[in-house]
Length: 422
Ligand code: HAM
Image 1 (cartoon, rainbow, N blue to C red):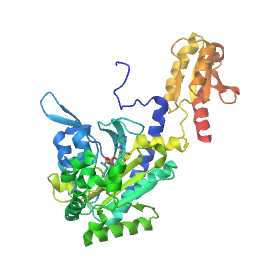
Image 2 (image 1 turned 60 degrees about the vertical axis):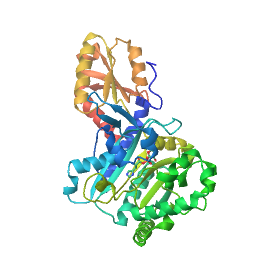
Image 3 (image 1 turned 90 degrees about the vertical axis):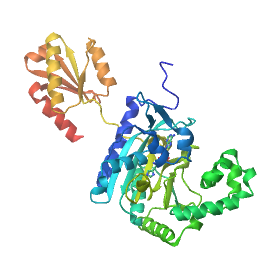
Image 4 (image 1 turned 30 degrees about the vertical axis):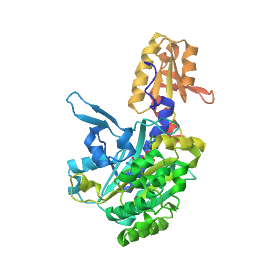
């Protein structure tokens, strides 16, 4: 128990972390380029936020939240997603008072109590963006293009964008009524989950994973067929902008997504190579959420991309993430005086931005060199008492084995030059 983390959680050890850092660097560059600025919200929020924001008929709220009472008897919940917290912060800090649109991004852990399996965890990480203040269809296309550009920069191929429009509240109401009428006679054949969804959220029956339910809804009225003229023309325009940006997509009229706040555009990005949990990202428009949470109406759209699923996909396509040289120069000392000089040289090197290290456990000369090799050091700086008298050290290229004497005064400039020539 004490040596095993909770089910559905992962430790990311140093070898793995470099991949995460690389992905995060790409995210930051990309978002800065597209004009999105980072926001960090707390990992827990008032439970009420998700009940109201995500919707109390969703799987997330019904069975997946980590909810607890704190010592002050407040009900708090580990965030299962990033949109509701971002909207809360948008309202709390009056971000709507700034020039619109407001473009935000986040990277961080989310928590959902679900049955863990490959690609599905109880703590997982999302990269998300949220764009507030416009309903223009070109902004829908921009959001989808940020996601696709992200995957492209990582070299990921074979992705499919599934696109739909779930319409405005009026379209949804019409759709709900039509769907209930259609399903009424098939009610007894639906799975027990879907029977429960019939009254409150029949749209979710459309994307039930059970084969039997999928067959039963094969000809059911879809959201797209119930769109009013305004929503229909918005959807057509989004498609035109996606075409303009050369982003391919498949219209999936049964795509409804598992969160209640969506209006109009809904999309999912799917990669089939990683098993059952193939949705590597998803998002959509949520034009009613800001108002629903107490603000004036502000249209908005965003996405959340699963980072564990992304890394699984990269692995599946054998895409190597470049790792940095972690150690440029490893100090190896022979003798007591050399040891003190080594500590000083290492300190000077680090102050000049060189990634350096040394042994502190009293290893033999051979042992120190072995460790330098294990750390992947580019150079070993060998310091012996004799050479020190002449103000020199030996520098050994760990890749080629070549070694040379060098004046201590010239050491740092040599290492800096070696880095620039790389
Ligand atoms: P979501 O579809 O619930 O949307 O989650 C987005 C992505 O998070 C999924 O496509 C998947 O890659 C990843 N994900 C979800 N659950 C898990 C899990 N248990 N384990 C691993 N990865 C998971 C949202 O969360 C919305 N907030 C997205 C959004 C932002 N819509 C508008 N703005």
